Length: 134
Image (cartoon, rainbow, N blue to C red):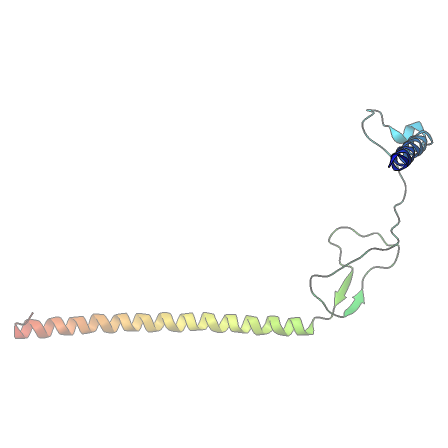
């Protein structure tokens, strides 16, 4: 047990020495700025592998950027085959338009029913007024 503790402390000390030696190896103007609070550096960041995923699956039909090109947030990187999605959208749009037409038809039917109800009430009032019934 004592040898495990000793090995642990020796390893931690070696790590601490390694980390502080690494900081001393950096140029002074790289590790602190004028205000002394920030780290400033310049250069190129190169990614070896970037995982890109789309919100929907599909087959890529067009790649819009090449390796090494700069891109901004929101720039399209590729285009997916969208014939099936477009057909589904068109079908949904047609169903939506049909539903709106059904609303108009139902509104017209309601207006007609209300007019028929008023006419029936009128006829009923005239009939009961002429016969003296209530």
